[in-house]
Image (cartoon, rainbow, N blue to C red; front, side, top):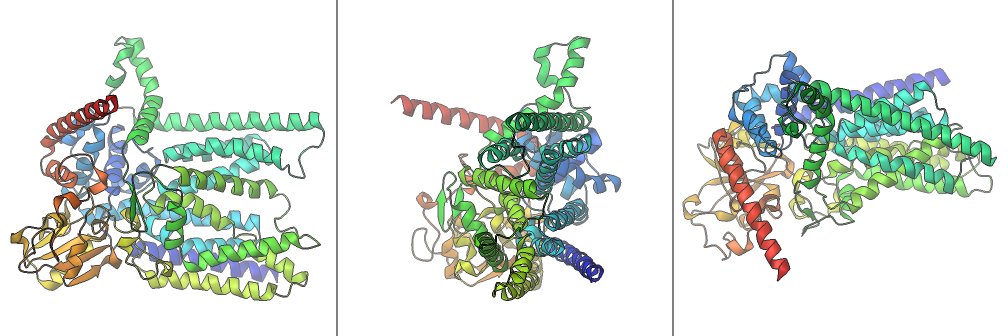
Length: 637
């Protein structure tokens, strides 16, 4: 019977992974290159081809390198004589504008954009599937094999994971390595050894190489240790001397594991920066010893420099439930999580909480977590609290993708549910059978939700939105990330249009996918625009622009509501009047920019002529300096 059950579970695992691969890969094949992918793909290729990390320093390299492997193997073309490459290596922060131009040329000018983006996304899809396997295996240990299968079912059909998993980003990769680090950390705490320390060090190193937010793990470790002092677990030594020795051994193991992780990060950066000029460390001198020292110090210098760029770069404002907040708001992630998760997952979380409380409060308390997994279960709770708390207090909140670590840990919270229901059924709880059937029904419902939402996972919203249009509730990559241009081109071709006004979200050239497109700002409609067809990003309706006026005219949703087409009237009403564009005082700025003018047009001009990067940089710095002077003057007054 047990062997038959195991075969059934294995069949379920294979089937769910196959479903996830088909749905996720099928969806992204219909998507154009997204906002951040433009910078990430170009940077990853340059890391491998030139062993030079000047591009996209604000994110560690691991995910980008993995995405670039199939491209480099296939012989992707890159022109390192292009001015964007030279410009990006000529000073700190310059790469932050040069990387977009470089990435755009590499993806769309020197190579076929469809094939390039497709092959770059395949390693990301593989990482997404690996995370599914990890959640199944860890879930099986925290509950039983049915608990692991439940975790995999929820994860594999989750719109957020299907949307962002195959994209060349850092979010799913960091989620994978955080889960591995959590598991390795708990295993090392349970039984310190060379093997467990090495596993922890490699996992932690992978996290640090994927995203700078992995630094939150440094808060998870002491939080876990403090939790053991607050609520000790049964297997901790009772004698004070033994307990002190027990803690010291594990603390030494943690330090060794962190050292291993640091070596991994150093080695990775050392190899990938081998050919990067060390001019930024000129202060150390120019003799042979100084040159050697500069090369040895480049890895930590690049890492810290990237961390500084990541920390001090301006982020978009938070937009949630129709309101814009200049900084983060505590309820941002809870609300966006509720809106963009399948209802089946949300109900399963409530069911798991109820069943857990019933099992805990019964006169004969049930042991829901398998013996030997208590430390791992504690780690899940602590890591979830730290990462979720950090998200909620963050000043920068603009996408559900930054909450994927917490979502994955919430998925693991479902692992004990089947085991708990089985125990409650044996103990005679009358609702246990109904709970088991409800769990099965919700698992099936999650699959149905994923199939029904295909292929529009990125703009997915559940019925908790109350029928309100998504652009009234969320923005940025919660809705449109420039992924709908292929569908926009299909619309243009079906209508036989020779020209279309395009107000797209991002720093790229829309004509790569829609040759008929003309750059447009929907808040600045002019009389000569009358009678034309316009395609506008949903993010630019309320949040990044103020273009709700367009809905007075015939319109159609594209790409699951991430873009809209509008048939403009032959005579556009005067700005500020009914049915007309807004007055300049009511304009909203893309990405809350402080730069005067349309920032997208600035980048578009640099894409068309990379030589404009230096004048653009000079203009940016001049305006920033002027702004600082004005701010200082206002404070003195």
